[in-house]
Length: 436
Image (cartoon, rainbow, N blue to C red; front, side):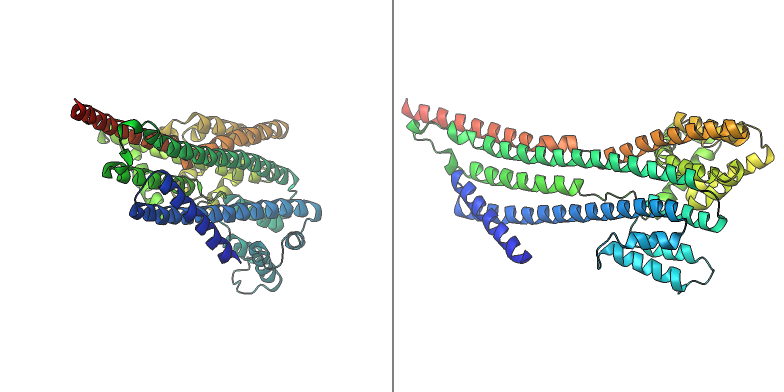
């Protein structure tokens, strides 16, 4: 049924392309090329639309699962029963349902678990299916809660609030994407209409037929095909995963490690350009990673001391960030009441948001209980702002270049119209010379 529907769409598209080619006065060969090229572009557009729907479904399943998992855990205080609640939300045979069933099987039987970490192994079955940092953070928190049996209501509130902010940011981002897609499709349609203006301006009483010219024929076909493929390019650019996954960052970690070492060298041995590039690249990386790390630390601070929270957070970080945390904990161990180790955390990058967060973290770790609770609330609010900036920055990077792509349809059609008008003027001048 789906194949029949696709075939019908392509037949309609091919018919429209043939009609457009006829209106523009193209030759049979170019009309056929336009029809084939347009159908191929439409095929890619449909593929990106289908992929975007899969990404949306994947995201909705993860958000639904995490919200229910946290709410059920808060109500029941038992991870196994919380997972059972989650399984009832998804249709049998769905991707999430299968992942939860495998997780529950591991949790109930301990199959394949050798080190006794049954809950971690169970959650790993779900994490294999979905690349989400928030999912991993929440799973780690629940594993820690089950292991220690500590009061986790404060941490659950933080995680649920963060999920709500994430949903709102994602919703705004997806609306922006849909608006851009619509805007680009309209721009391509208007650009195609603009290409027809040269035929409308041709003075028929002089017997001029611009459509008979090979330059007009080829340029028109190329521009119309380019408009189709520009739409396909825009859809490909905007067809990105909705989840907050880290992905495979092996090569990136190697590059960051080299830049980190460059920045760690003696200032006299590093050129100004190298230091500038290292600071810029590392600064962008730290801005993205810092809110996630601060959220992990905040969760541990609900039940642990500041030093222990930092030590445990190191297990969930990689690369240069983990190394920097290790240096931080070593300095704090030597000088527990000193502010300087906190200020030296990625100090060479001179990032104001990091400095502010570390000062609040120092206050939480060194003040009395009542002051610490107030400071912790402020830390949560500060981290929400940092997370918002970080994810908006990531979203803007994904949409980088869209401003130029949106303008390309009109630019192409304007160049095409200018060439046609120059050619028309040349033909008209030639005809007047023949008459006189």
